[in-house]
Image (cartoon, rainbow, N blue to C red; front, side, top):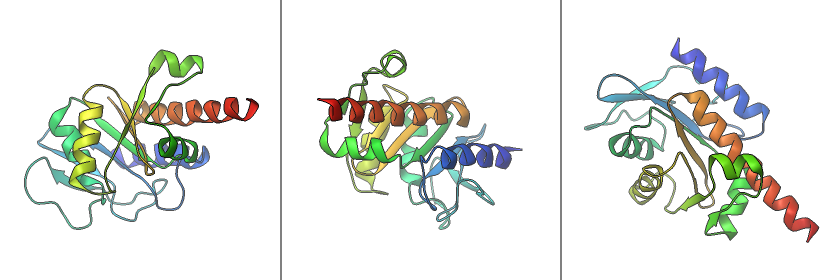
Length: 178
């Protein structure tokens, strides 16, 4: 069941400290012209009932506040799943760097550059900038806000989220030794 997958990935995000409280959201695109997204204010490890959002038209009021980003990404790309998390090292790095260039081997291999998107949380500006970034890659960081990672599944999007935080931790550790 799809809710079980959301819960499983949400538990991983919590266990790795990639989200806290009721921060973040997740979605999967379905076979129709819509996607399922977590509810506004829900905890990712226990998401409860998911909200169906059309790719066009009205949006239910209880959909996550980042529905605009998810919708724009699905309208402009072929990605099937999105994880939006608030990993602390990635958020911190996005406040001081224009883009993230991983130094670790996995980061270099899977995402040699992580772009930084701009815009206020929940805004059209952020939705457009994140969608533009994710049209070219599977991962970006919204400045001061958190990661948006994509994939064919929530599992793949989670892996990119974890990769971003690991790469930013390594950058932080390297700078502390200099």
